[in-house]
Length: 70
Image (cartoon, rainbow, N blue to C red; front, side):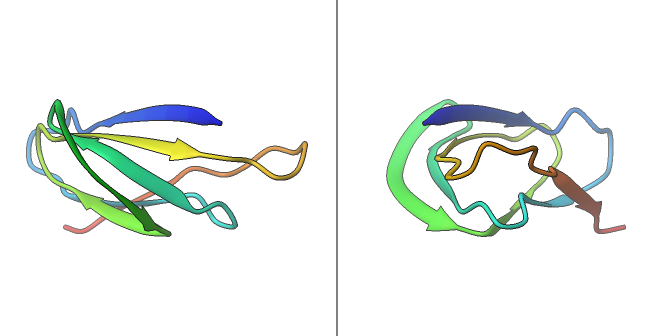
């Protein structure tokens, strides 16, 4: 298992974040523990942080996608 911390350090951009082929479990939002939620994609706004736990099933490289909404 790997814990990833996503930080949106942009000034005005919102992003859709996903890792194709690898589900994420969100466990923390803006420094506050939340009830774990499994998702394939989440939206992160300006100055937000999210912690996600991923469990890779294969020994390979995964792509981290962040698509801007603006």
